[in-house]
Image 1: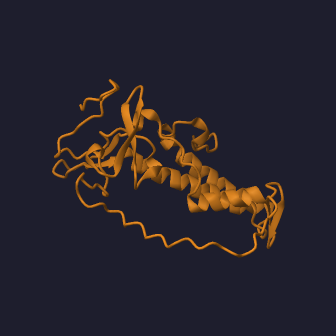
Image 2: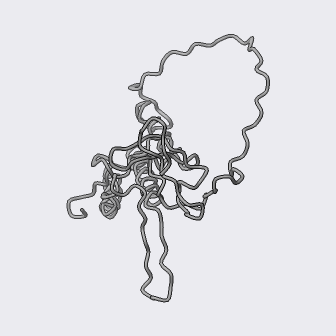
Image 3: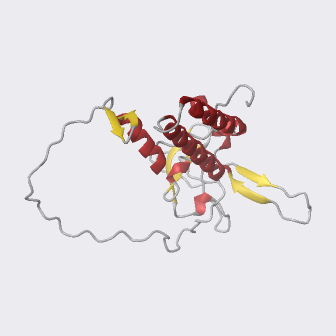
Length: 218
């Protein structure tokens, strides 16, 4: 542990050969958590949120002192003062109904689809007990080596599946050429998929972010 001048909790120091996030130049300390100690973020995987430096490395691991894997930022050209007229647009009404070839929905509903499809929505938090954890896949053949997968990576993929299902559900409900009966039938399949994914609910910190299926599928 490295000493600090102000007497605060020291930042953990790992041996150079230890392959943990704390030895990766992409991980940077941010704050001290009351329960976990120092936590930080990854410059490449910001969706992982805050996690301790003892977390297992990923395939982007770059030891401290090595060349950075990030491409250098392009040089900024000298700013040129614009002489074009300034156009002031009125503020969009989130409740305004937008009709795109029969897709009747509010502007806010449409923007929510765009945000989820592009991955710009806020990532749900991982349950505290799984942060920095590892999922181990053990083959039935004892001669084969098990494989470790950071739980953070698994959680990211589960969240992506959840978000894509929500976008699919929204597009289905707004489809102009499907009858109500057809929408109900297809919605039932989506609900069953949600039910099949409820096993991953233990990964979510907030219950509101979890999968919800039909009563028979949970």
